[in-house]
Image: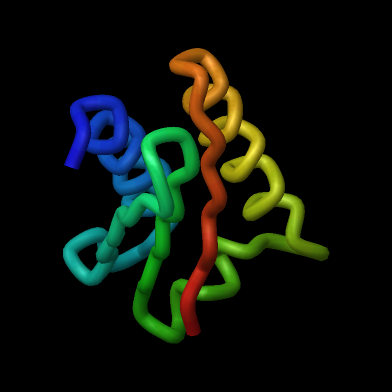
Length: 84
C-alpha cells in the first residue's frame, strides 16, 4: 500500500473512531483500483452506524468531502463506503 493511501486510511480511521461510541470496533480497509483511485471501506458496530451516517447522511457526506479533499491534495481520487 502506498504512503498516501496509508495516510488517508489513518484519517478515515480517526474520523470514524471519533464518531463511534466503540472506537475499538472501527475497521477501515483501503484498496486501490490503480495508482490514482482508492476505496476506503468502514465497518462499525450496528449501533454506531447511525452516528457515522448522521441525519439524512450529512455526517457521511462531510466525512467523504474531507477524505476527497485530502486525496485531491495528492492528485488522487478517493471513495468512502460505510458497510452495514
